[in-house]
Amino acid sequence: MFNRDQSEDYRPLFWVSGRPVYVNTLIVALHIAAFALVALLVSFQGSGVIDSLTLGNFEVVHYGQIWRLISYVIFPPATAISFIFAMLFLIYFGRQVEEYVGRRTYMGLYAALVLIPAVVLCLLGFLGFWQEYLGGYGTIFGVFVAFATLYPRMELNIWFVSMTTAHWAYALLAVLTLVDIAYHEWISLGALWLDASVGYFGMRLIGAGYGFTWLTDWLDERRTRRLAKKHNLRVLKETQATESIDQILEKISKQGVGSLNARERAALERARTNLLKRDQR
Image (tube, rainbow, N blue to C red):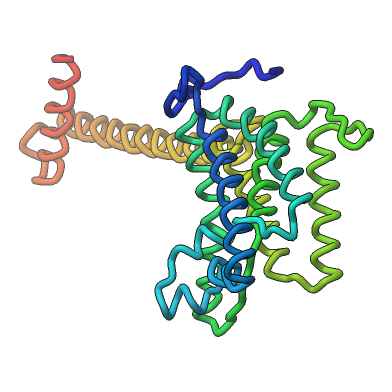
């Protein structure tokens, strides 16, 4: 494969018959197993099986059916062709992302791609917005966005069209957005953009591409200004203290030590103590 940037954490979860099984491999296998199982259940029990797996925020919030937070990413049997393309995308691009970020980070990324849209939809339920959502397309697209964030200038030839991965990500996002708008699939549209954001910002947070240099530069600038301000304030205080001591010494030379008041004596003692501390360093 083309990826030359390999994480130290890129290693198999386990081995089967001498072959390594990585996180992405396991995810693909689980998707395929779930697709086959759901297809068999639908053939014997009907489409009610799909309804029990759909993410319904009412069922999650009121009945505690938390498995729906994960089960909604299944692909129904009717979407077999789309499922094949989605798995091809996941096999190719998911492996590259895992190889770059390592297995722990990749597991966290995929979990975020699945759970964040689900949790947001459930939170909308508390506002009286009860809806259902089914489909793992947004999750797979989020993985592709993560890949495009890692390798934005890489040329990809898909369907005989050659563009950079960044341009492919923009194009696919635009097309999928228009499709959801055309069919008024607002939940699907929100999940799509959430997953795209998770894929993009997730990679930026680990420093892919230029990372969050604009943010870190701004924070560094603020920190520098704050330290400079503290330093200037300390210098100002030291200057004022020096000037005060000079005035006290001048007063002693003209009027003697007995002319000092309590505040001036305390200031002179502090200056003497600070001078001794400096000499001891």
